[in-house]
Image (tube, rainbow, N blue to C red; front, side):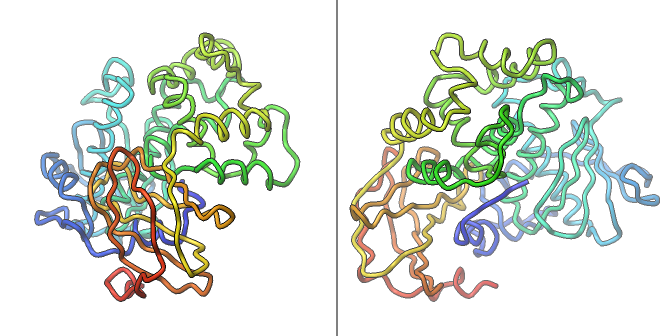
Length: 379
């Protein structure tokens, strides 16, 4: 599931008026045009009612890879169709990202599809399990896509690995890979990662170290270090599940990292995370610029709804040196809207910012106007 989002990032995910909306029976109120186009290409077939989701004689749809059922009577036909289509799109994108074949690698066939169960709670949460996914979509197809993608990563992890073995990967690795593939813009800057390590609390199991904290953005940042920093592929990380089934997570991950001079022990070590990952790779990898403001900003986010694959990145402000940090590597070049919130919970913006080559220069918030657009009036 998704955790620990900034207030503005959540709002940009779920409350803004659509940049593009569906005109077919997917009936999504908020969907990027590219996602709508992909959803329109998905074929769904109505099957005879049945009980595949612990619900009496519920409706059933099928797609190329899934049989989809309802978990309650409140799922409308439009939302049912939209959920089936967005899950199929997310899964097809994952097959490409992870270099997988549905039949040979995941044992999915026409006779043996995976099962998806949809409810009407609109809670934007889900649960990936072996060969199945429980899914609570909203009217926002962008957010539904990223949720389905996240949870389907868990389903894939369980299919290629052995969840019952003692070698199954640690939680931070499982959630980090799912979160990075599902919501790549939701991650930490250097200062945020250092702050996370320095201010964490509680007792830690020695095999989990700091990763006992339930913070997917932190997990995703470390996975990003393994891929963007060290050059491992998504397939390399997925192969850890296969290899760990016959050994241990530590052995399998260390084997994948054997040419990188990094081990699981390092990834559990506070000093390594602070100095090498946050202070080294991430400090140079992220965007940074000057900040000019007469307000105390507690939250800031870029509206990136057009790119459904990524999501809306947040900014982190440092008032000691009048600067900001941001993770913009997933954002395509272009002009976007920036919203900020001060310590009185007043929202300002939008202000246009131009991103080029994963950077956007200085930000002057001194005269930014109070927000009056749809975003600020949305409940």
